[in-house]
Length: 358
Image 1: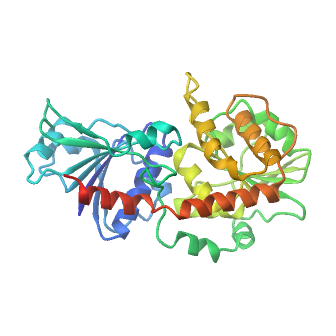
Image 2 (image 1 turned 180 degrees about the vertical axis):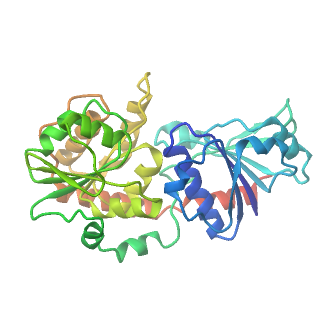
């Protein structure tokens, strides 16, 4: 099938990161994908080699494009260019029109997944848009997971990968990755990390800027700095497959947004998800909904500890003074991943969904 996937960049990494993974996954399954975006700059490091079957298009050119594909996906509620919608309305048969929504564990996702939205006015009058929600249950659209991902991870040597990155851990160190928005809880986290042997691998951008500011360091990619018992390594921008390997190689991952959270789940490692902060606190409800799905399998002390760290990292409370036991947290992460593997991946479900669409 021919797919038109539209993405407006709000966060330079999250929205385009999800859309690129979807486009590349669909193309790897034999589909042709045009990815329309208003800002492709992050793909220069996120996907420098591109992907066979994915054609990158400028958003501004969409209004002059003559024909829509078999499936049109508007990611995260972006509004399609009206001339392109008019082209969709002229097509026979009409394309399947999908609004790909944000990831959430909240109850409304199951209620809303697959709902129809007939268009009664405007250039798309007569068309039907359908809502598609990623999620964690059989009544949602699943999570992005490329075929063979877990097999790749099974053959992965995390220590060798870290050595290639020039950040070999020392004996007794806990290895962390850090990918975050600016976070008021970061100073408290750094203070705790500095009290024990820890190696913190800091991703470029906001995480690097805030860590450097807090510790009074000058970021130098490829070099290590020491603060107390904490060693800090500044990472270069990593293509998506290498970012996945970073998560596989660490003992504890601090991730932000949707794309990296899903990748942390597939890593099967303990992780703390910083959700996109919103003034009305909607991110806190989203975090609690996710924890309500994750934690029932955990013993009460572990569940309480993980919830406390998530709440602290998302601004709902102070950070706790001690970690949950990492071995138990690791077992929880692996169990969660195993449960998710019982669900068909997002691309497989989406292809089936549009094939059945009327």
